Image 1 (cartoon, rainbow, N blue to C red):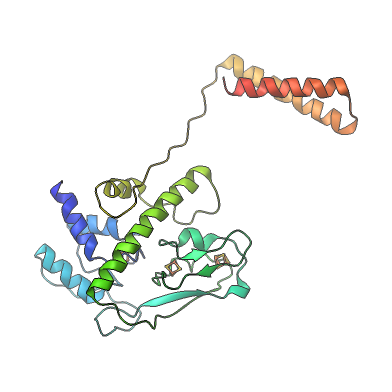
Image 2 (image 1 turned 90 degrees about the vertical axis):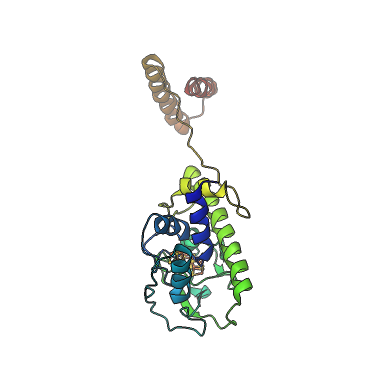
Amino acid sequence: MNIQISLIQKIDALLPQTQCGLCGHRDGCLPYAKSIAEGEEANKCVPGGQPVADALAELLNRSKLPAEESVWPIQNDGRPQRMKAIIREDECIGCTKCISACPVDAIIGSGKLMHTILTDLCTGCELCIPPCPVDCIDLVEDLQAIPDQQARIDEQDDLRSRYYAHIQREEKRRVHRKGPIVRAEIDTELFAQFASQTDNVPDIQLMHKEAPPVLDAKTTIELAKLRVQIKKLEKQLSVREDEKKRLLLEQLSLQLIQLQGA
Ligand code: SF4
Ligand code: SF4
Ligand code: SF4
């Protein structure tokens, strides 16, 4: 394996996988890991706090730097307080914007229905809060016990995997334009490249829109004529039914479909 890729994977393995973007890399831990390997300072992961900054300095054989400060108090393990988001469900209008924003797919719900956060999965990254048009998401302290090292590694592996699955789903939504897309700036190619070389994360397939067929001038004119005729017939038929015109409309519509696929 490429040495640089292996280094980025080692750095990424130390990052919390909250995908919050507080390090300045809006599309998550992997882009920050890549940037650290290219020389960026390794003390900017806010939820990781001092323990992560120190672990990175050790891995990279660099001097230890004070970690970027969090707005939350520091827990016993030296990291900032873990938080969870909660939706005030009676105020939710079911717009689905928070679903697209949540990097680890911790929110369930569908269009125009109340949404709920699966609190076990929520990392408190806060990314669902700004897109909510009715401001009905609160952050509360996570009261669960601080995880030990193995539990943290398992959690990070799970969050990484969920994020890659989320990126794949958002990539499909981007192409098919289903629902609001809140984090369209994800560098999907970078994640796809790493997914193909990393165990225990889903592969990511890049989706490309099929280019519409290039039509010659004659076909374009023919299509325009057909559309005008169809529109005219539809208008006439909306006023009075006429068997011959109905038949003609069906024939012209068929011709239009055939020509469009030419
Ligand atoms: S968890 Fe840390 S490294 Fe990952 S996106 Fe947030 S601040 Fe950046
Ligand atoms: S529910 Fe909100 S705070 Fe929790 S992980 Fe998802 S986006 Fe982050
Ligand atoms: S963004 Fe807010 S209003 Fe929209 S579905 Fe999520 S919680 Fe409900």
